[in-house]
Image 1 (cartoon, rainbow, N blue to C red):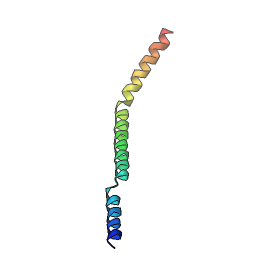
Image 2 (image 1 turned 90 degrees about the horizontal axis):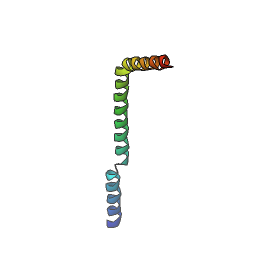
Image 3 (image 1 turned 30 degrees about the vertical axis):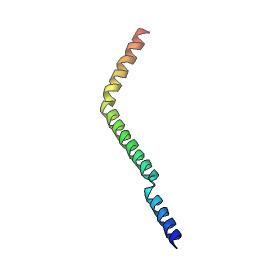
Image 4 (image 1 turned 135 degrees about the vertical axis):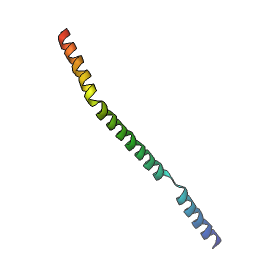
Length: 64
């Protein structure tokens, strides 16, 4: 009986120590946070980048 209880205790302890799922969730949350930051940055600078692109396009067309 001692060995069965000891084995069951080891099994329960190893199940508690496994943190692979937690790490995956943390990476997923970090990726989502980076994506939200990128989207916000792109939206904030979208119109000014469009104006820069238009200016450069017109300069290239004028040079041709």
